[in-house]
Length: 168
Image (cartoon, rainbow, N blue to C red; front, side, top):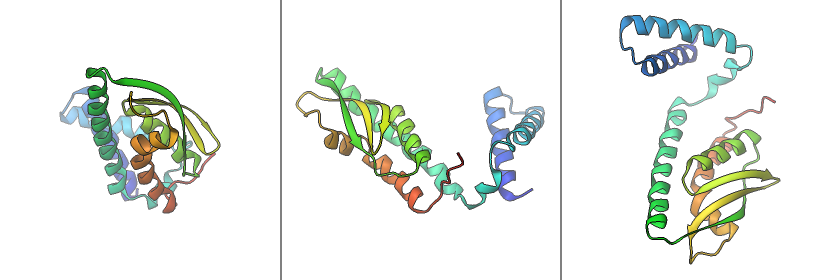
């Protein structure tokens, strides 16, 4: 059992203990058992051998960064709604990512941030319902700069380092 398998086992056990709200030795034992069973059955579908090159610091840092972006977007959307200056429109934003996995990850990340609802990826563009100020034109380049460019830059680093491999 490698260090990454141990890390995955410990993480799944902790998630089990948090979700079951049982911080006892019994909860830990059940969590370890459930984690081992899950890892055994998912090993057939998930390539655990591919995980050895992932930097777990960056893996933990991205969700924290995304939470910060969600917080900032929530404040911006709240200001728009409370001042009655919100307007929506559908825009096509360019995507610089080539990896299909990272494109989907970008789309899900944008879905979590308030004010944007992506609904289609066609070629190198992503169609998005965008909430913006009434005085701002409904422009795809402007929407890109205001909503997703920072998130996409973080994912571009992962793509350039060839972290994500397509398994499909």
